[in-house]
Image 1 (cartoon, one colour):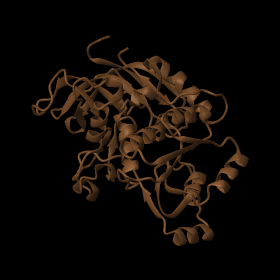
Image 2: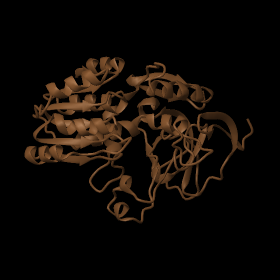
Image 3: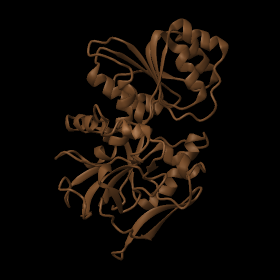
Length: 359
């Protein structure tokens, strides 16, 4: 490979990812060049790559990233050096809007984003703004650090539940994907007296949830879903919706008990209609409905990313949920399998895929 080329998995058009040597971009003074050692494949990459939801083509996807600094820009301060292991916060804020001025960067109105609104880390190397880099503590596995992004999302959602160390709440998690499974582990660590239930239509994922101590509910068809709703009306003290389906957003309200907190976390896939009866139920149960988006990074009162890295340093292992590790050349085929599985055409069981662009 020529020194001025970067081997990358390029989404050329919907349902077509090809590996190409792309021209290396000039390193700006406020950037570091990062050799990508591990990149998580997110569920959003499935719809972006195979569901025609990319903002533009061609695009290098990949936003769950960790690697090693191999070059430092001239204006980068001595916080970072060549050889440092780092993970990458993918959102690039404008720093000028109301949210940014409150250090609520994930709520920025004019943001860019590595891997969706600009090229990301399904590539050997990526030039990253210094601000978006966070140094990895010594001895922390690189794959776990690549999964800080989705784990911080889970942490941020769990913290919305306003739990305490002696809390004995019954908590229902709708969705047993990576983020839902990480939420179980976070609740178990900080709030061990709580009882966690998890609901999904995928028994493979539920079996993993059971290993982490959750009570599982398999809903394979409309009949079993209706049975679940009937048997669990007004049952749960706290509910988190991670699936993103209008029907599960609605179900979260149905299964919540009086004075419950309901957290809507899933990226909703369609319009949600709330009936008069449901509104009356919200009022009569005095529900608190909270939205959650992404995670807090370098915030005024904390940083979910630093909290997550601390959890990983103390034994939390997001990488336990890695189903397989693949090369750049395998991305297209894996996305096709995940897309077919998501649409019920052919089963392909996986929780998290890790890409090694330099493998």
